[in-house]
Image (cartoon, rainbow, N blue to C red; front, side, top):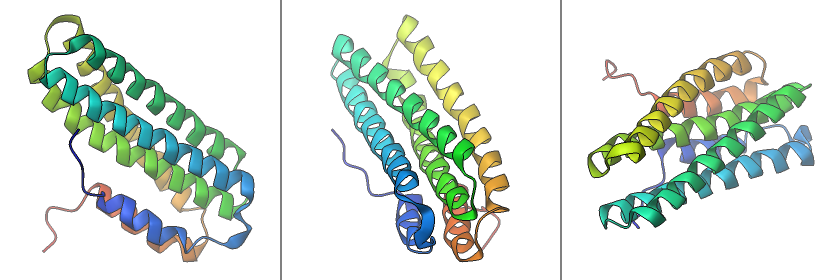
Length: 175
């Protein structure tokens, strides 16, 4: 299993979490924690799948790959539940943070999945390509949702969320 350095978005999200108003509520924080747990499990399962595919242990690799996809689906669904239940500015800020966690993981998945395409053949290759496409579309959708949510969050949370969003897609034209 290869170890990854923490993503820039993850570091900014931790810092940005301190800027959220205290009244966000236990249910919302539990939802954000749930999204984080699902994305962590998805990441670990995909890392394991990559390692297993590289070792030609395709059966176990497929299981880990499918576990990763299930966890991403659960993270995406939980982020959607948070968005739909967000009735206050602080709840929308938490929903944006959850959506950024999903987007960050989707970005990492896209990179790993496209690299993995060289290791596999046949139906598995099709499934991995489809997963990469799904995460690409999901990432685009997540960014659109985050943009809408950023217009509805408290000003003290905006800086941390903006920085996390910039870390997802750094501007290559800036110095």
